[in-house]
Length: 450
Image 1 (cartoon, rainbow, N blue to C red):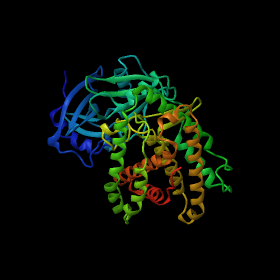
Image 2 (cartoon, rainbow, N blue to C red):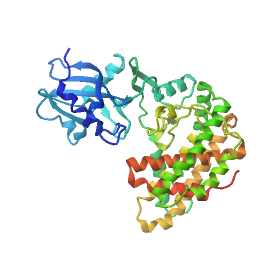
Image 3 (spheres, rainbow, N blue to C red):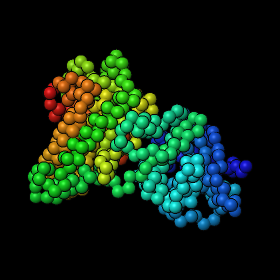
Image 4 (cartoon, helix red, strand yellow):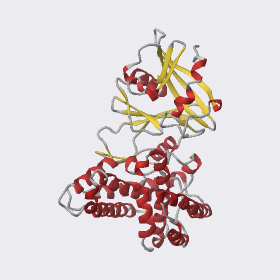
């Protein structure tokens, strides 16, 4: 069998460092990078083109590289403007990210499905950060996992478990490709014609900000009915997750809650440096309020990264996507039992993100008049979401006592805002004002217990 040229290995560290799905801030030390596994997945009949799969270790992490090989010479048109997708030339050939190559993407579908699926057309989605998603004939989407973890990938594990439990608000699983150690790819029904929750919310806000109305209920694109339906689906998801994975013992839940509260001090100190003022003195009163919660409610496996970009509105209602959890957190944290109010608070934070994101489309001179509309839209949809969530039969059993619900939601909103601040500093510095604004509101504007 053919093998990759030795000089190609020297190109991999710089290639990894240029990928959005690489976890490090800069290219890895070449001495720490190794090709642990190598497979030739396909070779063209004339022998001029090949598809390779390489499992690469870089320090403690593993990555899946899917490499196309073509004869050296003129670069393929689909690589135009995509320098980060090219490793370079070696041994009279050049190597590149094969998922951009429609021919090789279709080969990959056949390999991942064990020959059970074929397609006429393939295209790559461009919005992915931590994985690569390929759409085939607008009927199937294959998520190729780039950063690998030994054992089950949370998205595969949770989605499959929810379908087995009868939860219908996920895209139907069609392909699960794995080897002895890793989940490599996951294929599901492609929700053609669906609209991402973020896009619906943004449209609603644009309608409001551009209208004569001073009330989100009266604007043409009121989102509240959808927010309420989404709240119901979220509660149904939590009931299904608890039924499949079970609840952690009460002592474990209490310990996890205590660790969350204990961690606020150092995290707020770090946030204070960004905010330009000390947040802890005022926030200590809020954390004291959290500490008065006697029982935080049931802890079990939750979505973990729930926001408007992770839900899709289809003709058949809302569908929930991507159960991998927050990408900046380690895997053991993403899969640990947690309060369902973590997901609730994350969606509430997403409403705030949408309102402030659309506000930024307007001139600063308009903000004074639009800020009350932003706050009103957010409050309106928060209420609708919570009404839908709390109206689902059985959900109250999983929550803390009613007088503590708002405190637990506020604690997880604070946790999420601090996570967002850390994430935006690293990846989108221009968005840092959004979590900073949230911290101000949570710390200085949170109300008393219900």
